[in-house]
Image (tube, rainbow, N blue to C red; front, side, top):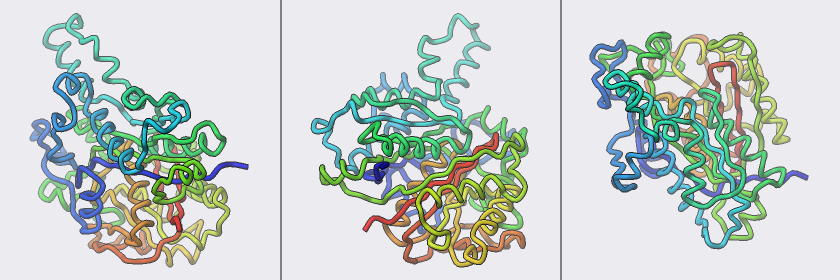
Length: 412
């Protein structure tokens, strides 16, 4: 019999808050994290804005030497993980660290480290490459660094599946707990790709909004006038735990992860399958895994990127699977406020889903001013909704056709 998996801690570093309390407050108030880019001169780029993490001073968390040895994405991962561990009331000297694992993903890894070495080579040749380049750049280094810091000696690896990365991390972490491989798994994702290569690459794909006259209005999921996503950055961490282990140590239980579904579109490099066929199956699988009925789902935190094809296909997928119930549940996209955190998106949106269950408040989809006729569900437009939420799904889909749906249950 598989073990139950509960969430006992959460932490976040986001464009609208450097901790859970600040993030949740701004989220339900509908604050946008979008503004003109400050990390580099973006004046010659088609997109000149993003959802940067603001007021993040690494020297508040690390000494100068450590900062120089960690890419920004790893710094974000450390800070959100520390909050999650404190939140979970873990007493590190009272647990078996051989039974604590880490599954922590990044869609890209050390993008700023790449940028720095690129400039170094251009200015002085490959002989000037730092010996720290590889261990700072590789996407699994956050998982490794977290384990080193806390002495967690259980399973340890990273997931990488584009924008589904950290949702996969959460799902496979739960899988390890269910089968008894670990008592606790630290799961999440981090991304820091608001850089010349990051913005330039997505501009080349025509994937980003170019609403440069009003950045705070640019991320507008399900709106008729959406013109692309807004890049975000940050990290989120969940402490997942075997229910019996959590009860035994008197842990705070925030929610239960009762189902997950992984599928592939096997269709196109970047476009979703027609009708959101892969999303239909991932949501169906997570509901079946939880052994509930579709009409028991109260809320869906949508992938909701503010791109034409994603929002349309995700809406179609929800209607296909839920039928008439699609118009009774509420769907919203927190990306309207945080932007798209790429590999960290699944984790931050799982955190949003847990907070929704805890507070019975559904965050809004801001900037939804003129609904797309093909997107005709209740997206909690522009204002948070107070509503009892017992079951909620968090969706994450990635380039390459990766689909993940996570189903959380209110803990009572």
